[in-house]
Length: 230
Image (cartoon, rainbow, N blue to C red):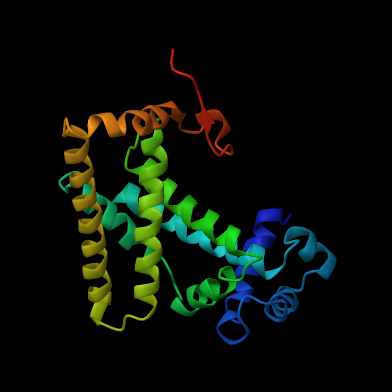
């Protein structure tokens, strides 16, 4: 049977997970995973040029995929939108098979050379959540929604890592409080925008925000575009 590139990568990921709790997402763990899989080292490094870093990102992607599958299978139609967001974040954390692997990942992506990869992974998770829940925004709100959720998600992950309460109930309470904070901020922002006394001061910022567009759907790799109004 022919083993595909992705199959080999998933085999390496499964193998390295037994070593990560002891040696982290390191080259030591990566070489141990190669030996466990019986792969040629040259092939393994062609599949994962950055070694364990690539597998740490693959581990994150696996969790995202599990979250999306659960979102598809769960009926959230009776929930308020804020509760759907909370459910998605909860599903994402519940998809993690080993908290220690995430803890080691946080340590890895806090390093300056990998901080960009970590931020991109968190942004990607939040983008998947908004898309799965039907977000259709095409203006600056596309960015603010994902940026805000990235902050909520990141802080919740850090709280969750230290939570030993039954069924992580304290984490879910923490998540609800963070979402409530966001909702209060959004209410305040709406009130400010409706205040006629503030309109002269907000005219230029609102005009600039109105020029921002979400990345084109067919080119999701672009960071964004600035278009003049017609």
